[in-house]
Length: 344
Image 1 (tube, rainbow, N blue to C red):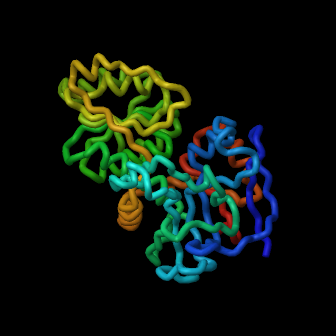
Image 2: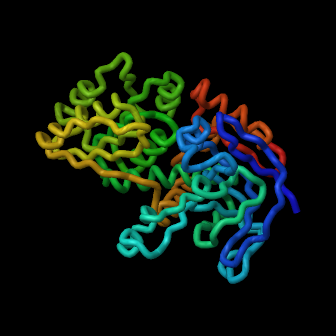
Image 3: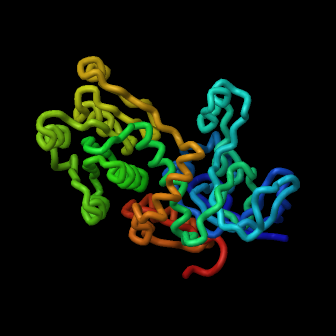
């Protein structure tokens, strides 16, 4: 059997190739991939920022949904035909982090779709322990949002957002917008800081207060709107030095700052503010298994307007132009690649 797969070749190039399909090994599940979203990490790969890690023969992608096509030996808990998503983390089970119950930040973690083959292909073999079965009523295109939504669920949990908290989200891209939605669902009073006018308009259409640091003194406005207190929880999702500068300026005394974004270079952080205001800074990396379950529940509850969040859907053969569009004109909230079957 053969199937199509996207291969990263370096220099901002993908090729869509036909490859032999291997049967699933013992303990693996084979999936017919339906949809796969383009993630910010995928864009880093496309731009060449991760060539040393990824190489030039890899199929990437991890924000996916699909249907079980085959089961490897020893897989007992799943059935062919079930709709599923993959939690793309493979841990070693034998390091201090795993021993402490923190498998998601395993010292030897394999991120499936970055460190090995990913979901921008028609047939995908993954470890069975990564599988989450979807509710029958969940559209597969919507289900491909579960992985990034699980990131947001983990971030908000790390920030311990409580009803009535004033929350500032710095960066209104896909993850920032999902963080804002989950934080609001948790009871936070959420403001989004973003420079992209289209994303600001989308945030406003969802009912969020917004600020544009190009024209607004965001920290000053946050303090004014909170009676001089500042934001109880700040999420840094911009991945920029100005975002890092803002996070300490806008935080309340004993405020909680959650570092979400991956920064290309080490940012400079105002540690004096941490001393002066007794701030807490929390790292937030990927997700627990329970965060995927929470994300599925939130999608079922309609916390995310999936139809408006998914900006466009492209066929697998157009993956190159989809990446080019996202880097040349980054106004899309979420671009999905339709892997198998015709676009609806």
